[in-house]
Structure formats: structure tokens, C-alpha cells
Amino acid sequence: MKKLITFAAVAALFLVFGPTHAMAQGPAGNGAGNAAAPSSSAGSSGGGGRSYNPLHWIKKSKPSNDQLDGSSDRDKRLEANIKSSGLLPAQASMADACSAFPALHECLAALHASKNTGIDFACLRADVTGTTTNADVTSCKGSSDKRMDLHKAIRLQKPDADAKSETKRAEKQAADDLKDAA
Image (tube, rainbow, N blue to C red; front, side, top):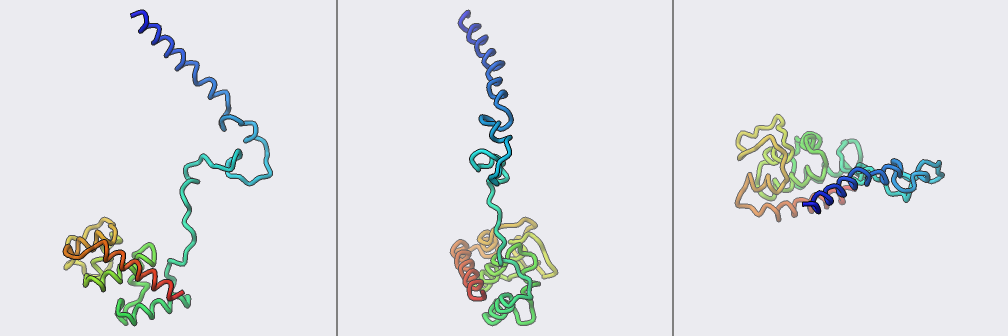
């Protein structure tokens, strides 16, 4: 019993006095004087150039050409190619079809998947984006308000299709379309 009390007392002392060493180092840890000193380097957090802010660890998305603005030559070529291949009706516009998608390549992949599998594009768009437009989606199987991946939407709309391979095929076709239009 005496050993248990001694162990508890030593543990309590470590808990009380242990953090004082860490607190004495300052807010930036060891070498706080270097971090507080003005520096000519443009590092993000002083020290070795490594930021301890978790928001800096996340890769920032590069500005991409993956948005449709309709006025560029690339967008006009892309829309002409999509209409000529039969993915989009002649009277429809890419801007209307792709407005609900956050990225152009997702819209193109959904258009290709729709044509390849025979699924109505309005159903795929509703499932992939989680939004409904003025298109009629009453004939769609199990459409939901939740956003889902393209392969899950294909599996939901057409359970007998190989959803993963169809998704890969559609994404490759979409990437090829973007490359051809560039």
C-alpha cells in the first residue's frame, strides 16, 4: 500500500511540474527567439519553412480550365464536339446541362456515362449533383437529394451495369474531350 501511495505522489508531481518545461519555451516551442526575430525569408511560420497550421497542409486547388464560361474558343469547340458526338441534343446548351456540376469534367463524364449506359442524363445529373433542375426526374429510380459519386449513381439507375468500369470509361472519354478541345 505504501508503494501505491508513493507512486501516486510521484505521478502527481510529474503532472504538476512536468508541463513547466514546455511552457517556458514560449509559443513557438524550442527556438522561440528565432521565430520572434524579424527574418528576411518569406517562410510561412519562421523556423524551417514548415507550417504548423493544419490549413496550410491541405493542397490548394490550382486554378483550372475546368469551368465552362461559354465565351472561350475552347468552350465553343468542346460544345460543338459534344453535340456532334450525340452526347447533347442540338437545341441544348452545355451551360444549361453543366450548370449544376461543380466541375466541367464531372459534367462531361456524366454525359458520356449517360450515353454509354442508356441512362437518362437528367437522372444522373440529379444523383451526382444532389440537385434537381427543371428536368423531369420522376422516371428515375431512387433519386435522392444527396450528392453521390458517378459509379453509385450508375449502380442506382442501372443495377445490371458494371458501374465502376463504366465510370472509368466515361472519365477517360471526358478527359479526352477536354484535351481535344484545348
